[in-house]
Length: 515
Image (cartoon, rainbow, N blue to C red):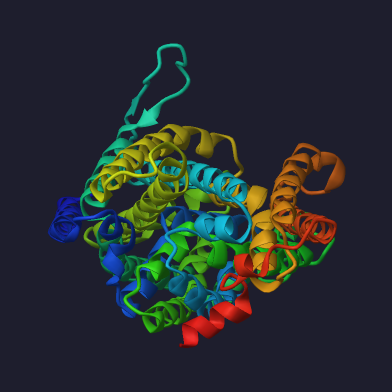
């Protein structure tokens, strides 16, 4: 059931090509700005395609199909409701604002608007999330390798933990991504993402076409899924009823996803924002985000429907994350398996390289440079960023086995990690940009209390919620807590001096962009 010779040839050609692109772009990296922001030379079309490759990675190709297998068509909301509106808002309101400000990171802006304490806490949180999310991505890789290659050789790095092992395939993938991200920085990340997005779309389209044909068309797909009984009654419902035991009941989708996780992800996610910060102009920054919104419109068709096809053809699966690998193995002939496997590797690398570069940027600029070595050469910070890149890669590889075993699915793992802090960070980000009266103490206390409320809700989830994975509800209520606490504390503390908030609140910043 493994790969044929032509499949290995296609994969090898792809890997060599990606490494060649990264190696070529290495000659343009001479400074920290080149490494972290591509020297501010990125065109709009590359930014948009890189944003999609960053957002839709290996975890999503496996996880969206796997979650659709379990919960149905509601997963399309992660793109149609959870991405496109937020992208349009970001393009015309927040992205020009970020680009003109000249900052490297989102925490850097929060430090200017509130305080260095807020900046440091957000940088630590985002850095840890990006590193742990690498583990989620690598766990998706392990699932695909295991299903397609028929084996998954493991090593046990610690003798005192015999049950803990790491996939050899994951280690090889990590080395390849680390090499071109180390050498080429953000430029290598973005331009390899362009290639990887194209391959990813083609691979997913191949799976969809073969799957629809094999199941007998859309009408037969609906009939087969509905015939499975009451557990699939809402599989073709975009907004399941509020009393559903699914984590995607309509209140969770509308409030937790639509109002919190979606805007937080596209407006405050360093891995996303960093592409626009590297744009060659404010127009390129805006146009790149709009282009990403256009490309995102077809994602649900390409990546959610295969999960329903797998359900119709293989309703006996115990884990939803096995749905897509089984479709690939059962439907595609030699050659196309290699193409789809290359698409999966493209998605894997598109996610990993983005998170690596962004995490290294965060901790270099917002922690190392700020507190440890504030006055070093540009070359020094370039090397610090590269060393941090390796550290984050090792953390991700180490977390991969836990991400696969401790959560219901890899998509749930990622959303759970996001929901812990996205609500409070979005609260202080929006209030800081849109409300002059928000103070440094309001932002700090709102952030801390909001994140603490997330942990409390997860610890007491069996008491507070009726579903097993309430991450969307946690995101919404932690956002509400963050907003309320920030507003109350800001109103009882002295306002910030006018010169401190000048250019940092939406109105004045927009005037500067327009000049």
